[in-house]
Amino acid sequence: MITLENNDLKVQINEYGAELTSVWHKQAELEYIWVGDPKYWGRHASNLFPIVGRLRGDQFKVAGETYFMNQHGFARNTLFEVVEQ
Image 1 (cartoon, rainbow, N blue to C red):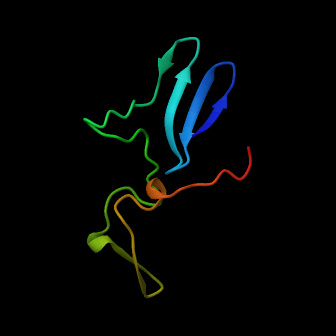
Image 2: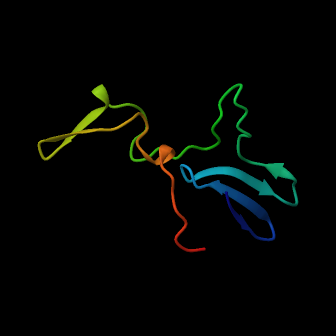
C-alpha cells in the first residue's frame, strides 16, 4: 500500500491495480472512497484501462492481428511498481 499525505488529505493506493483505496479528508473526518465491503463489492475505485466494458468475444484487432483482452482491460488486475516517490 502506498500512502500520500498532506495537511488536508491522506490517500492510499494499492499497488495491485493502482487502485485508490482511501481518500481521507482530515478536517472533515470524511472518507471519499467506497470502503470495499466484499458483501456488496470488494473493490474500491478500479482503474478500467484501456477499456470500460467487454469486447465482443474478448478480442480486438489491430493491423490484422487479433488480441485478447479481459473485461475492463488489464490495469485493474496488474501489479504496478512504484518507480519514484
